[in-house]
Image (cartoon, rainbow, N blue to C red; front, side, top):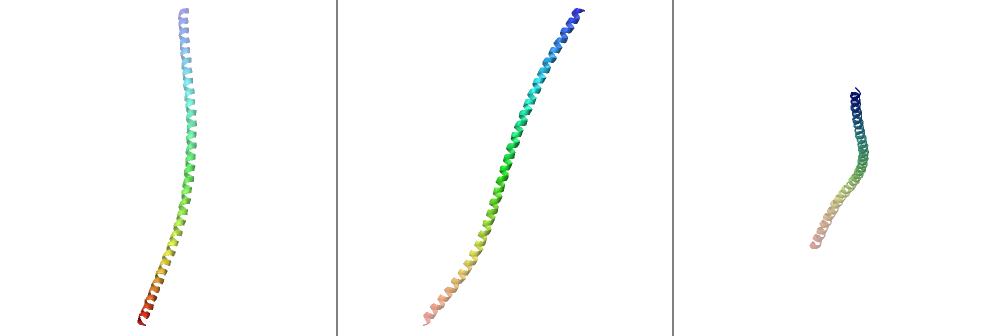
Length: 114
């Protein structure tokens, strides 16, 4: 009976040792998983930070483009006003030229008749 108990005890010790090794392996896997999770969290924070910076830069770029667009609109408005004024001036100058040409014809006709 001592041999049976000794064999049973030896078997139990093997099971305990196997269980201990399995616990150690499981703990190592858990530690690795935790380290991996922490690494992923850190990487995620870095990605979020980079994304935030890119968003802020894009917003600043958009704001600058909007300001440029407003400047272009103002310049276009000024150019349109200047073009309108130039068209009026051109019309008045053409009319004045026609009047002068008419006066010259009249003067030439008077000179021819004398």
